[in-house]
Amino acid sequence: MEKNRPSGVTIVAVLAIVSGIILILGAVFTIYLVPSIITSQLTSNMSDLTSTNQLSPELGPTLTGTIINIVYIVSSAAIALGIAWFGLAWGLFTGKGWAWLITVILAIISVVFSIVSIMGANITSIPTLIISGIILYYMYRPQVKSYFGRVKISK
Image 1 (cartoon, one colour):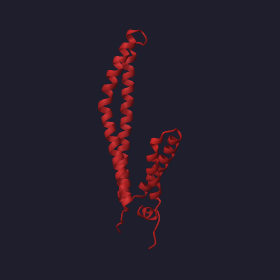
Image 2: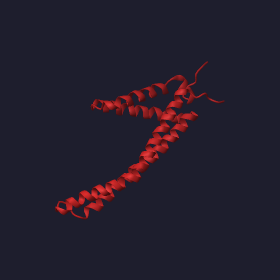
Image 3: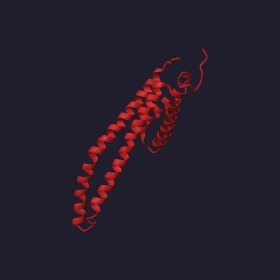
Image 4: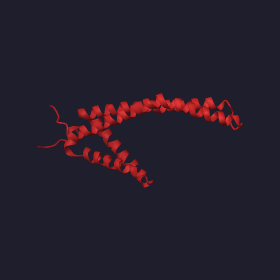
């Protein structure tokens, strides 16, 4: 029996794909561009500090290498998260129950963080709060829950 996917689920899945693309492209951009910027900036700044005997000359390369390794680790995690967003989108498109649960959990987390951010005077989180709230509300609609096998709708 084929399920009819609610149109809003398609929109949420597309948002998941866009999130995945942004994470992966941002991470790849960071991996290729940021280390060269860090190397040039830190090398320049370290030579100024070491010439005035404020820092040891050995600290520069160590600090640069450490920061670049952190950039690689964070970027790798972002790529993994981007791939996870693609998996979530697939689950949404195909009506998997786990995709509904993960979407609800992520929406709740987003709502909480948005509220905390707004309380800290960050009004730029208001659109995120609104979108996450709408997604959370939508995921609890009977036809959406039925699509994911969460409830049965009697006709």
